Image (cartoon, rainbow, N blue to C red):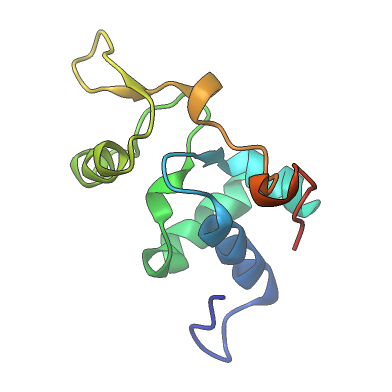
Amino acid sequence: MVRMSAELPEYAERVLEVAERIPPGRVMTYGDVAEWLGVGGPRQVGRVMALYGAAVPWWRVVRADGRPLPGSEHRALEHYRAEGTPLRDSAGGEPRLVMRRARWDGRDGRDGGDEAHI
């Protein structure tokens, strides 16, 4: 569980906890995280990840279009390749995530698929 400091806002802590739960090789969009938490939206999740995300597997929380974040493409791609995250070539040269295969719905597969909400 993420406990960066006593000053970490509750919403940020919840977002980071979701990011930590995403299995290797899988991703959630900013909107997925907000929907899963039932509060906030993609921009709020993106803001939390920008400010505090370095302490968690930030590359697993992505844009809905499957492209790595500008400026972080190479680092993210290294993680995706190491974790076996589904990728495909794109016309622009940089690989994209195969969202229909990489997207995680927040279910914990260890116990038969029951949702594991925080």
